[in-house]
Image (cartoon, rainbow, N blue to C red; front, side, top):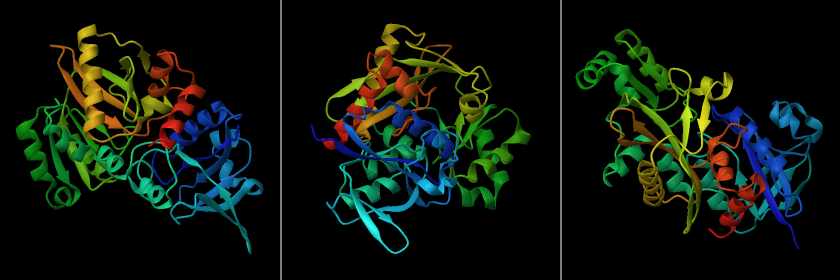
Length: 355
């Protein structure tokens, strides 16, 4: 059987660069090598692309980009349908045939439609949602505005432009305090892994939190505090969808921020979630509906809250290129359903080929 030529992208200019390295290591060490010829391409924090042929452990510890013996400058051909990666040496170049790209990348310049636009220009099939859906899902403000038209329950919020915050932060603070009581959540519209997000418990912390979030995007979202369980669902598919059991995240900290997820590693999870069957089925139905409305393909993780006081379901956000790290919920949820990691990876690649 002829192997599929697969390009796995990792790294990138995003604040989630380190998470991408962990995800890529998981994929590279679990993929079926009998089915795929692998070309690993790393993108540095400065945005330089290199074909990397060294040990995968150096990806995990971020020493890959110093391993010059195994680096070759690379770029995707944007000649539509040519399907090749161009490797550039000092005076020569050569092409590698690429059948499918698996972008194991997260955050801006990765899952926000920019990379997907480049892949669309190349004509090479790729894992995940298209340019438009990726951009809409990454931008939490746009996601909220679209889903409001489809009666998806969401947290109340105010959306601020960075320029407005800079011009009159006190006016923004007054508007927030007129609509919400403390605590509130503040986060950039375009960011992942809770980068730039904070739970603000008192008035004196609000303006610093707004400006911190504005470091990461031109739009800042302020949401009401929801006292709730955090529930996540994995969706896999294009036309026919596999929707996982509900999983529950127990942050074991003030909230499920970047440090809790990836630095302190103190959170725990429950699959299935500790919710009743009726609530679970409603969440899974919402997840499928949201996936369809936003035009997602391949995979997404859809996150919800279930309120402690009355059991109401609140949509939180959707992630079109969720993590594949050792602690990531997306693969854990599908593995709970009986799929192995190599099977999940294979399904995603086949979905990309049949986009």
